[in-house]
Every structure is written in C-alpha cells, then in structure tokens.
Length: 567
Image 1 (tube, rainbow, N blue to C red):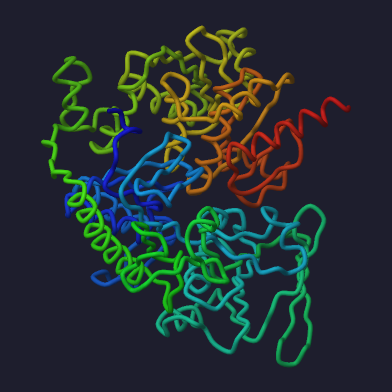
Image 2 (image 1 turned 90 degrees about the vertical axis):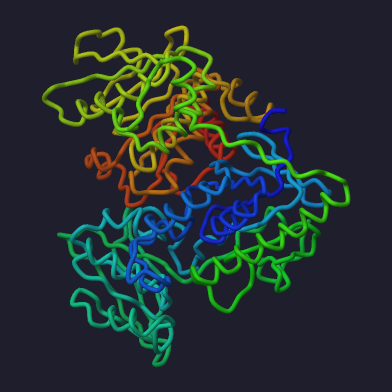
C-alpha cells in the first residue's frame, strides 16, 4: 500500500501553533498522524520576530518556538508535509484530502488552517499592494530602510510589528482607531516609550496616493473630523504602510460541508467538534475571545484528544486491531547501510542538520532520472562561489544529480542555452541535456531551500501531483514564456510561488521560471518599483504580488500569451 492509499488515523490541516500542538498530542497517543501545511511550519507565529507572552519563555522568536514544536511532533511520530490542499471530502466516514502532492485519507480530520491578514479597505489599498502597502513586516520591512513607515492597528500584531519595523524605518508612526492599544500593557508601554515610534490615537487612514510608488497619505481624526496629509520628501521617494488589523478565517474550502458563523469562522463545541462527525477545528479558524498562542495550543490539545477518542471508537466498531510498526533507523542511515554510499553519521559534511538531511534523502531516494545543474562560478563574484559551494554537497547526495561548474565565457553555447544574464545563477538541465526552464538566481537557502528540493523532485523524480487539465494547459502554451519570481529569503510566502511556477516549467518546455533573490539585485528592485515579495512578472509585464497557486499562475501565463499574440 503506497503513501496515498493508506488510511491515517488523523490528518491535521494546518501546521501552525494549533496544528503542531495537535500533532504532538496525537503522536503521543500513537495515532498515525499527517500534518499538511501549505506554507511553512509555524504559520503566522513563524513570522513573528519576538514572542514575550508564551509561558515558560521570557522571550523567544517565533521561528525558534515553532521549530521546537515541529521537532516535538515529529519525535512522537507525526508526519509533516508542505503542500497546497485542493479539496477536502469531510462528509464520508473515511475523510479524503486532495493536495498537489497526492490524495490522503483518514478516519478523522482537525482543521487548523488559521486566518489570513485582513484588508482595511482604504482608498488605494489594492492599487498599491506590493508597492508600499504591506501585511508582513518580516517579509517587506527591509524595503523601507531609512524611510518613514506607518503601521495601522492597535492590537498585539500592530504593536509587535511596529517594534520590529524600527530596525528599518527612520520613524514608525502607529495609527490606532481607538483611544488605547488592545494588547498587554507591557507591550503597549514598550511601543509608547520607543524613541523611533510615534503613536496617534483616534486616527484612521483614509487614502494613499502616488504614481508608481506611494507618495502621500491622508489621515482623519475620528473624534474631531480633522484631516491631515503626509507627503513624502523628494529625497525619500516613497514610504511604507503596514496593515495589522486582525485576520479573516481560512475556511472557505469547507463552507459547504461544515457549519460556519456569519464571519466565516468554523463553529465548534467545547470539545472542538464541528457540525460533521470526525471533523474538529482548532486555533484562529474558530471564533474565540482571545487569539493567542496559548489559546491555539489549548485548542490543538483538546482537538487531538477528542479525535483520539473518535478514532478508537470507529476502530472498535469495525474490529480494527491496533498495530504499531517497529521504528526504522533514520532514512540516511538505512540508505548508507544498504548502498555504502554517502555515509555521514554527523550529518555535517554537507552543511545540513541531521533531520533536514534525512528529509532530503527521503526525497532523493525517489529520484529516477538524471539531471544536471549548471552554475557559472566567477572568482570575483563572492555569491557565485557561495552558490557553487552550496550545490556541490547537495548534488553528491544522489547519483541522479550532476553538477557542472563553468567559468564565465568558458561555454558560450551553454550560457546562451540557459539564458545566463546574472550571477549567481543555477540552471537545471533535464535528462536529455535540454534546459528545463528552472533557474535560481541567488542562494536557495532559508525558506527557498524547500522550493529548490521540490524543483529537483519535479524534474528528476515522479514529481508533485498536477491535475491532467492543468498539465494539458501548460503543455498547450506555444509561445516562450518567461516568469521571474522576486523573493526575499526571509519571506515564508515566496517558496510556494517559486515551487508552483517551476512545477509548470518542469511540465512545459515553453515556460521558464526563474527565482531571483531581490536582496542581491537592488537595481531590479528600483527598476520594477518592488516594495514587497513575492513579486512576479510574466514576459516583462507589470509585477503582481502575493501568493499564487499553479492555477492562478497559469491564468497569468495564458493572459500574457494572448496579449503577446495581439501585438
């Protein structure tokens, strides 16, 4: 029985604080558990720079806390995967979850899909999204180095992100609609006392304006009705607006199957049970008085323990006996014992932590085609040498991966084939030696390491699942299409867009998908007026911003192809 055919005891949709906690409790209860997350482990918490109200920690970064939770869930046997959920059938006794990586089945499901940043609705918000208006300080703060920044909101997120943005902005102005902050006094006092922060209470943002980038904003005092205007200096050229006014639940996929409240939150009882048997919800996706990490962990623990009771009851009814597979040695040790290759008991020879290396090896064991990664190494370019040093040990982990390192000008035909135009660069050739259209201009570390491994898997292995309809649309593209995805290595949304675009490139030889680390190419940021990531251009057209699915990227490709044919 392969991975997509076996029935899990529990599938958890969402790898944030609630989902990971549920995974910990489910794993300890010996439930066969799969956690599916569409972005990265930790959800919103993983983008928070500092957490000072989680019990047991005076202060801890969001990424570190979420990494510890993920490690703990895995240590109890929970499986974790990153993939986009396309459809979920929750009404049957055996639940079915369809993802881009395959279809998975289980007796019970916990919905811990969280919530997405809420839009404010001021004039110009949509027009300037990605060109001055943002919703993720960690992703976009660096774009406003030495400039004025406005933060909208009066809750925990607004206060915490305002403090974070002082690292970049010359001045941070917080606009609070009411007469006080709606967060712990300790955090509010810290914001009020910060020398780089000004707080304006009873103030609302009415509109922003500009040409290519933000040039001005109009504010209103909601007590007096008085309006004021901010105009950017000629020296600064632009400024930033970050909106942190709460979130809207990510539950639309389940609307017709379980009961939601008028605002779209999933309704549950105190046991986290939804209106559908065997389906539970936890965290910010359900209505609650307080949306904090501690309440999310509580939800996850309750949901998992109740799911355990439900699953055991189902198995008793069906006479299914509990059997627990013997633990196997880590994948990298097992492979070394079988093949004698790549023996590395420390896991440090290739720069990978042992657990990360095990995950990579699990993917690489499935590779069945040879591919070549071509990189141009210029001794005068530090980043090109760093990229070559990054690629060499990774490629040594599989006999299907070959690395070709060239000096600039050494092979002009190859440079022409891979459309070499900047350093650092790494281009993928397929098993026949043809350019696949997959390219990385930057070091695919940080969050982009996931998209790099997926690119290898999609080209040299069986690849992620793609619907026949979407694959046919990709193969029907007749005109050369060049997609550029501009990313920051600190952005947790970027890898999803890169992986989606490069999967389409692996499917169609007419599509090129190039990841570009915008931090290495400031001239492109200026040329395209990029103030947010992920940003994407198709055939040089106007950038689009934010997360995009394969279907949405395909729509943009077809639209661009149609417009090119008219010209």
